[in-house]
Length: 403
Image (cartoon, rainbow, N blue to C red; front, side):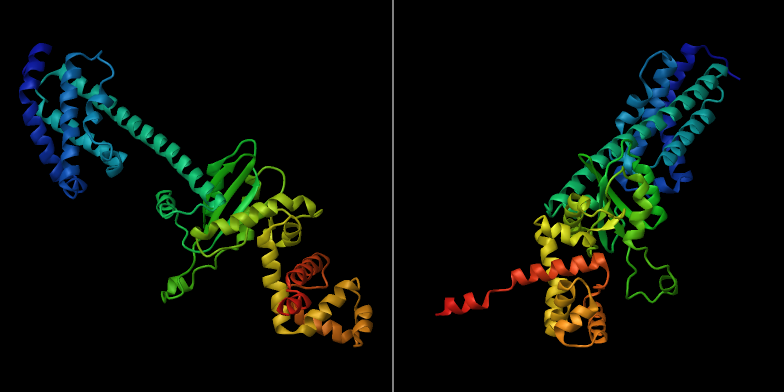
């Protein structure tokens, strides 16, 4: 073994630094498949990091007290996008190769050099982890700001061409229906817990806090109808949005929790958001309002508060279908509701048997999907009839205008 002083070892290291860099690049190509598969520009950047590591080691060996040295000297030579192209695991593999080359070439450098290599390799490994941790923290803060911007765009309905790309940048995987859930923000919001719960029910979420409100955009992956794969055919049916909202309910603060109606895709989420926000504003008017509650279950309260979407929904889903299907059913429903949901009183007014009224009410439920015999649904139906009648054009006025 050749015994050298520190000064002699330092001079020897500077002399062979070019040889160490060449040997390192060759070993990277021979031992790391991902390195040889990288584009030339990225491969060159990785080579610069390896060479910077050798140069930094020599400088550190000359003066171990110099600080800071690792992060600025080694990783400062790499472009920022390199951190996004190679993982922390690959970076540690790179360090291992560099250290092994230096150890093999400098094994005759004496005990001082071997100890220095051990210390330096430990420090640079910790420094690498610190660089990636800082990058992850910065990315997390950026993602949070971007997510807040996307949720705000959904709530305001300000759609632009960049919204899909922003949503994709957040890792949105939902490609099926979407619904928006609005509730009170808790004092201590645990965003990670919301995401874990969403993953458990096979849903994707975007989370935003608007003042005292917590808004969660829920995406549900749809099963492609054209798929003939046996696995896709046997896949479990998507979980309903109300069930997903029930699972997410503990993550909200006290108060009302309103789920907007489902829309076909994320770009239509503003429609669901408007319904959920309108329902959240009037939920206090329903004394026994459940938690969570569908925004469509609050249609009367929303309509009374002036929500045009609720009014058009009531007319479009109840009044117009009944009128188009059978004026007789519409008239029976009017009479039944005006007579306090009494079968006998309705039968007397219409001059029919109570069983006929009962049959017609069943037909009403088949046409529009609401049961007029229930107290809450009767309120919804009566609201639809009133608003629909108000929206009808005045025939007498129309005739007068034609004269």
